[in-house]
Length: 248
Image (cartoon, rainbow, N blue to C red):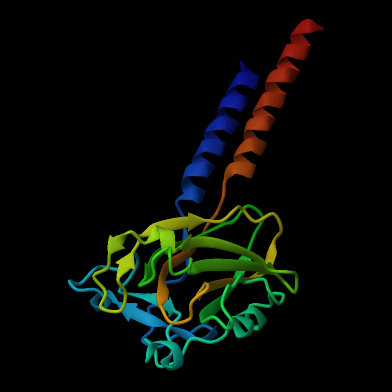
């Protein structure tokens, strides 16, 4: 009876831990400042719900980050006051190797930002986005991506949206098509430490048809799985011990 009570207590503690910890998301960046407060290259800046007509609420707060591939040279203007830059510049900015960002054009237009993030083992990063473009799949698969780098290690690049995702007519005056708002959840961190999280947008094949991505609600959600398994495992050991005593 005593062992059963202990095992029940451990299980209850684990479940309580899972609920309480998993619900405490820590916001890293919501891009609420009037001016961009994180390192950036290219056409990058905060926008509010008036970016769309009619007004559309942002996923978190009142502003979100817009990255675009627009520049005066290719598109006759930009959206933040700074032109999109070359793929090579973005690769250098995000500590990527040359050629890490696939580009079918001669130069390509790209923009990026990066955030400093401290993660513990099991921490999970997530963010929300909306992909915007004036391109079709015949024009080239412009794409949005994130990078994750621990310390001075080699960054990992992951594409999370492209032209094919933008299937709805856009209510933004700057783009023809858009995707819905979606959430990306990264794998749980396996190593504790200081990370660099990057976000980027890049043209592919063409340099003259703009694309963009809105980023918001970048957060850390503590992952309770490991602790949950540990506590449930301790309960299981108690059960095995009781069985062993009975056999003897």
